[in-house]
Image (cartoon, rainbow, N blue to C red):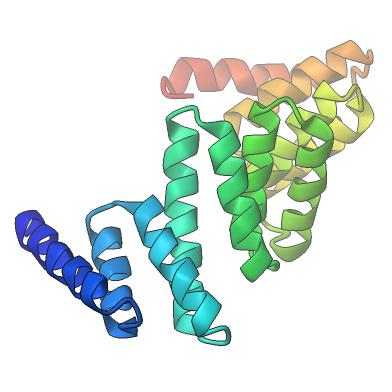
Length: 202
């Protein structure tokens, strides 16, 4: 299948060399690059198409998909600046996408930009207020910014949404200890011990 797609891509690329204005060939090249997981190339094809077909939602969505996949792959491989750029570009086209905001914030945290990350986690929460992981990550950057009270609130919200979010419970305990907030601390620690004992993957 991969060889077949690679051959088809070469054929469409040759068609574009003969006629650079062949929009169908551009679309096919972009789609085949996505099939082949060549997301950076795919984004290039869909960018060029979008400059011509400015209001075409399918092209816009295809570009955003390619940017999302490239961003996720870049983040997984430690290329955080590339990941940040991908999600920033995707948000230019789909500014109300909570997942793009969340992933942008994750990249910015890795780049040592906690203030920017906090802003984008908060924007993601406005669009998707029921995501425990976003609250947990917001708590992490608030902790890094020294905003311990806010971090505790974020961790508590994460646990309200997902009581089994083990790392949020651990972070919550640490922050409570930092500010000498002992309310409910023994119960939190008991739950963590129970998880460690009975849920090895925790």
